[in-house]
Amino acid sequence: MASGGNHPDQPRQPRNLQGLLKFAMEATKSEDAPHDSHFEPMDEERRRFLEEALKSLTLDVVEEIEKAMKTLMDPDKAEEDKADAIEIIIDFVQDIDAANDFFKVGGFVIIQPGLNSSNTDVRSGTLRLVAELSQNNPFCQQQLLQSNTLPQIIELLSDEPPVATQAMHAISCMVRHHEPSLAAFIDMGGLECILGCIQTDNEKLRIKSSFLMANLCTELAAVRDEFIKLNAVERVVAAIRPSKQFEPKLETALSTLNVLTESDEGVRRCQDSSLQLKDKLELILKLNHGKDECLEQIEYANTLLKRCFSDDNCSTDR
Image (cartoon, rainbow, N blue to C red; front, side, top):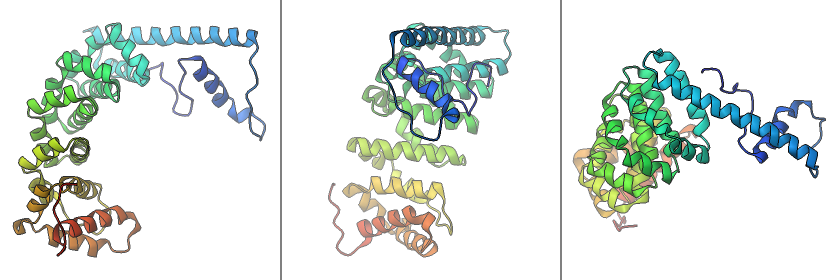
């Protein structure tokens, strides 16, 4: 990462007075005596000193952002330098207020060129920046939606694996808990994109896609039902491969299937004998019996067996 970022072992630089106090305490923790620290009332001189220190620190942050922006907008700068510049900005916008301010000062102008870059690291970094800006941030989610960023990111789902994985992460951050973005995503065929990604050879992309599907299904029953209409159950079951050891993609698939079977239609589809789901679930239980690392896989499999294949199971919307 370019200069300006924190060393991994150092506390993150603060952006307010309370954060500055915490920063100072963390940075000097190793020098403290072996007993608990206690805050004491701050005298006016000490407060003024800290406020001046904060002003200086804030100025440094702004200057770093300005330098990073100039690097990204300069066509003559090396792609490696641009990738480093994006890292600086990502570190800055992890604070929600700073992310909003980043938009207000015109920072979003770097997003489209970054997504269109011929350099893998720049495209991937820009997608991570979009994710940081939009995660749990309705203001930035709305601004990204209005800037028509979503179609560009959907196209990057077919990019090389590192970029495609970051594209799914960015989409997840943009559409979760923001219904306007989710509605636009669905109108663009987004649910079909998620299902397609579940069937790719990119393991990380499969896991992120399944996670997003499960999250959306949990949030909105209507989205769950739409996934089922698109044969999500059949596609997820097809991806289930019983294993003798813990497999993240298997656990994710079983978790997703548990969400999809929260409806009558999901259960009914699981009961289709051609899917051989019952045999797969029983084999999972047999192969993973007594393995602590597979407890969640076992729990999901047991739930699905009971829900879909027990004699007294009842398929009612839950």
